[in-house]
Image 1 (cartoon, rainbow, N blue to C red):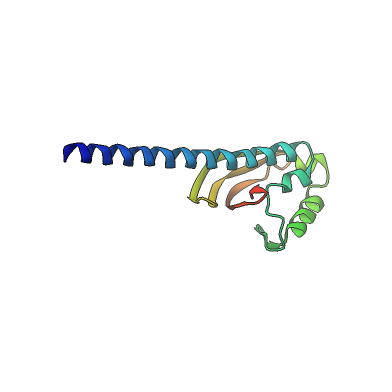
Image 2: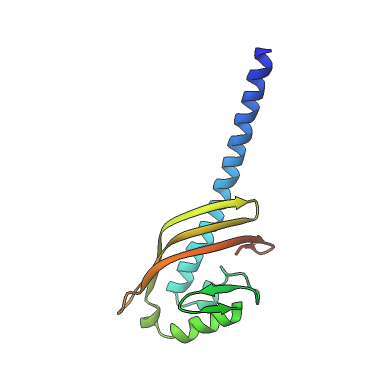
Length: 135
């Protein structure tokens, strides 16, 4: 009996470790998307930055107003950050990546653009695992 309990305990610990490894892998994949966005922004590549967004008319951006649609979000970025001075240097910090399931997660964090006016704020992102990866 004791042997069976020990075997079940070892099995449960192994499953928990595998689950933790998968969670860490998903968090790292999402962090890579965010890092790629920062790199694209800082090169002035707004289309590259938008690769981190779900390319769908259902994409929703909540800022000063609510914006729907991937293309509309991109168009707004192009209009509002049309010069290197306005784009500045983007950074994300204090990220907390929370995996909800095998294909969903949310991220909270802070953003800052080092520029003449230094805008900054907090964000919450909902990520989905799509055929194109995490978006």
